[in-house]
Length: 228
Ligand code: ADP
Image (cartoon, rainbow, N blue to C red; front, side, top):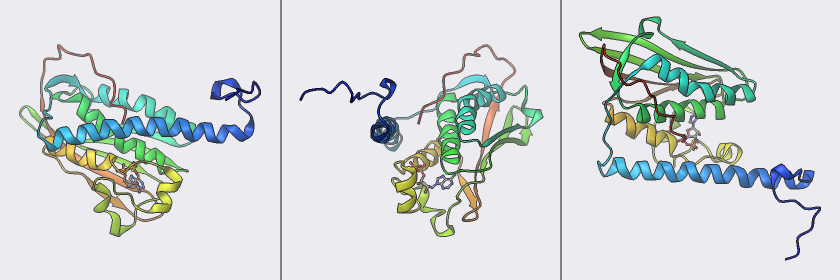
């Protein structure tokens, strides 16, 4: 077909107003597709017990700050307040764990919080709930002031491809895999995910992980957060 010079097909090419919407939809769906593929691949790995946790030493507080860096921008783009609240007793704690998997969990939860919140704030909180010898138990929570989740959906949202309501899916998109991945990955950490929410006024997702701690922090290079 002949290409009309006045009908550019890239967002960077200053498209006409009526074309913008379509281009945006296309751009969204490629990102969604990529995230879907990554999530499905991970799901299969976990399902077939092929996914094992790495054991890398890193400073937990710095690691979470790094994950939240990009997410904070995303929240700010929507004019949401982003609060990162890390227990000061965890400031120097080096743990031995799997940073890639841990970032996948945090990234999925915070991305959802931002996605389902139009006004208010997102709070990511880390609390030291127990410390014995060379172990530390950390309570992670992600709280938002968004649309919330109906009580009768509190369990099903963790199932594969489950979404709370079809009109929500139409508005916000997504695949219904994120929380299923979060739940699966957390089983590898011997942890479970919980949700508290009042429909219409936000949600809080939380889990506790017991980490081995180490004095020696020879490895400090932290992998980039998983993008799904
Ligand atoms: P996706 O976000 O791709 O739809 P998820 O598995 O991450 O899939 O989430 C499943 C469903 O749970 C979402 O479709 C949404 O209905 C609900 N949900 C998840 N997180 C939140 C949140 N922070 N606030 C409100 N609803 C949420």
